[in-house]
Length: 144
Figure 1: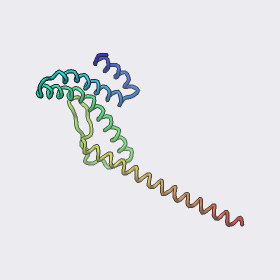
Figure 2: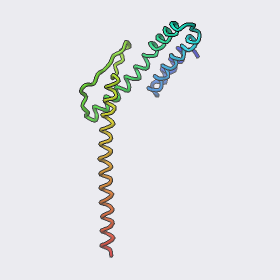
Figure 3: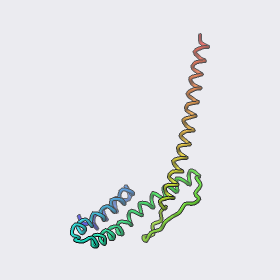
Figure 4: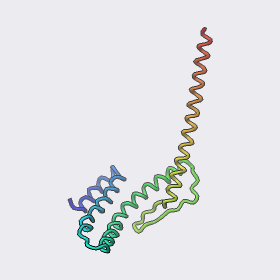
């Protein structure tokens, strides 16, 4: 199957498996350059081919980064996390995604918040377990 046909087919699959299809489209584009790289004779021509491959696949990789950034942003908004000092980056294909440092900062803040929630839940479960144990002990003593 030729590259444009694979890209079109994956475009149809995007409705169901969005992130997977976008990543596969980028991989198809990158694999299309393997033959050209194998035929390249000198270092400079390989660099030109690599630059062209990276440019053409970057549309899909950056689109994937945009989707992930939006998910992080929505999750942070939902958790009411402070969103100061978050920097966005735009590419030549009109994709807008979080810069690396901002993305990791948001991810860490979300994980810390989730950890706090789970710690609280575990404390409540431990307290309830203790209360249930105490109640069972009292019932056992009162029945004697």
